Length: 132
Image (cartoon, rainbow, N blue to C red; front, side):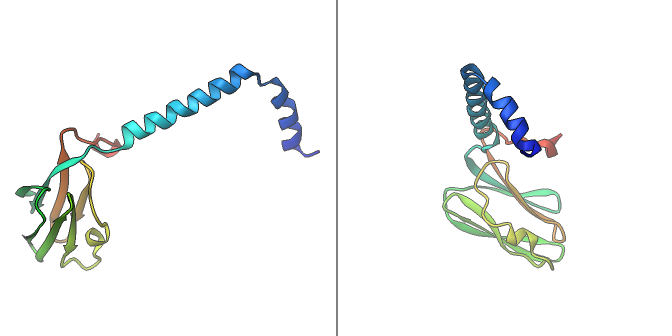
C-alpha cells in the first residue's frame, strides 16, 4: 500500500454525511459566485480612443465600420451583431487584431503602437484586479 492509499483509507471512513453536504454546498456556492462575479454585463456602446482622447462613442446596435486615425496610420473598427473588434491596424505585431470580438462590458482592445483602443461599456462596469 502506497502513501496515497494509506491516507485515503485513513480519512475516508471519518467523513460523514454532513461533511459531504458541506463540501457539495460549498462547491455549488463557489460556482454560482464565480458565474455572478466573473461574467460581464451586456455592452451597449463602444468608446473609441485615439491618442488617449475619446475619438467617438458609438452604440453597438447598428452594424458599422469606423476608421480611426493614429500616429502610424488608420485602424479600422468593425461593429456587428452587438460585438466590436479591431479588424485592421498598421501595427507590426497585430495583437489588437488577433484579440477578436469583444462582447461584454469592460472588455478592451489596445493597439499601442498606433495609440488606438476600443472599450465596451454597459450599465455596470466589470472590475478586475487590474483596475486597482
